[in-house]
Image (cartoon, rainbow, N blue to C red; front, side, top):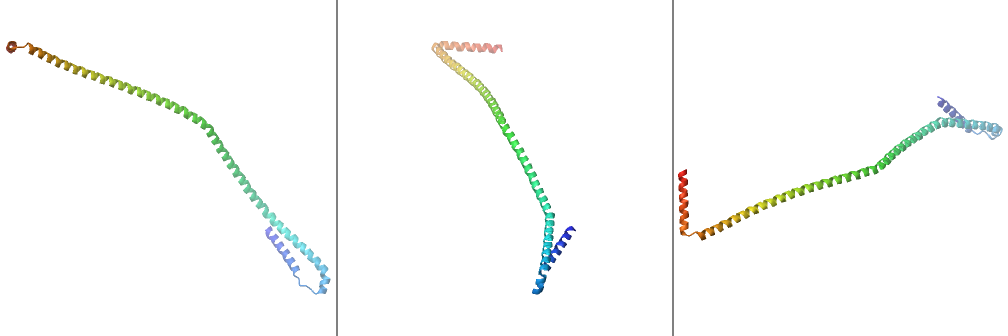
Length: 199
């Protein structure tokens, strides 16, 4: 409502100022007589018009500038708050990263200790496995040696038996003549007859 009143007053002042400025020029004689009073009237209306114009502009400025400053101030405040939030987030992330970096040294040391323990455990496992494998190979070799020894002894016994038989056959053949051979056959047959009669 006030705005409408101010606009009406401003419009009326401008209209009056324009009307005075556009009055038809009178004759030279009238102009001379009224020049002083016309100039006074014109100056008064000019000042009134100027005051109304300044008042209207002042009102419009007073009405719109604070709202503009307020909205601009709110935008700036919002921007500051967002910047503070971003700064806090960045500081939080930086603190987390520093914590991770500080922990990284401890994690690396723990990893080294764990890797060393794992390597020692694996080394013991390999040594145990190697010792077990060596014992198995030793037992297998002993068994193979024992088996080879038994085979060699058996072969040696067969060879000795063959030699003994050959030697005995040679001795027997050298001592046997036809009479001894007949006597042995007769003894063998009589032994068979005796065994047959017992059964």
